Structures are given as C-alpha cells and as structure tokens.
Length: 180
Image (cartoon, rainbow, N blue to C red; front, side, top):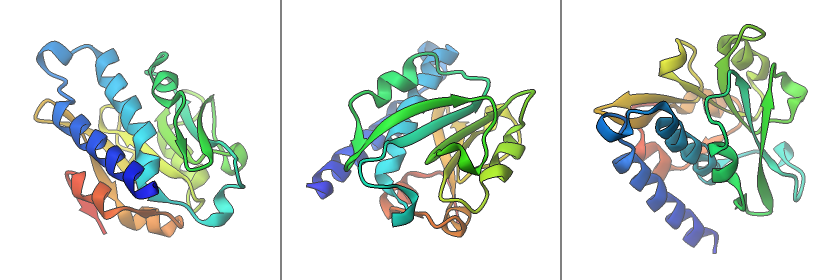
C-alpha cells in the first residue's frame, strides 16, 4: 500500500514540476506559494527519517519560520494528509530551535531570526530543511528556484544524510540539481 501511495505522490509531484508555471497567468505570488505549499506537503513521502525522529502517531510537523507567504494554502494542502500514521500539521514560528519539534522546516527568515540562523539552529537534527532562492542566499536540503517560469527545486543530499535523512531516488530524479 505504501508503494502505491508513494507512486501516486510521485505522479503528483511530477505534475507539479510540469505545471508549476510562475510566468504569465501564474505571476501572482499567491499562486507560486500555493505550488510551494503543495510541494512542502508532498516532500515527506519521499524522505526517510530515523526511527527516533517521531513517536508512533505523532504528527509530522511542517514549520514555517519567518515572514509567512502562504496564507491558508499550506494548511489547505496539508489538510487530511498523513505520512503513514503521522498526520501532517502546520506550525508557524517566530524563531526555531532544536526543541521546536519540526520535521520539515521552511526557513524564510525575519527580523527575529534569519534563514541562516534558523538552519544553523537545527543543523544535524533530523529536520528536512527547505529554503527559497527568492528569499536570499541561505540553502536548505531542498532549495526552491524558479527555472524556465516554473517552480523547481535543487537538493543537497549530502546535507540531508548528515542529518540522518535519506531521500528517495524518485525525488532526486525530479530535482534540477543534486549535490551528493
């Protein structure tokens, strides 16, 4: 059953890559961030966390630290979704640290904590870090970029491995670039 869910998730993720146009009719930032929100809720299906990262039935927490560009899009994308026995939950934080309980961290940065500081706060912990090229130079394990008018991503698999995470080869195949 997990294989079927993973295949369906991969198809959806591939469709997002193909359809995530940000130019022309998709030029509004809210649509771009709706696509990014969908990616954030799909990525966990292609990542393996160490057993110690989550207790049984604990929610898989997607945290946004910094100025939030999503509006309701992230909650809408996460609603009713789960990774095995872990329902997806969204948290918005002014600052993050290792004890924040995040499994996925979208680090944008703000006046209280820069994206680089947020990444440093969870470095080495089993937290999938995601950053955005449009928001500055800090780079997480997954880094959103706009390429040929589409929302795409680059992956730093080495950084993920150093935090105890492994990424599916299917996810790596969808990335623009992969650092190993």
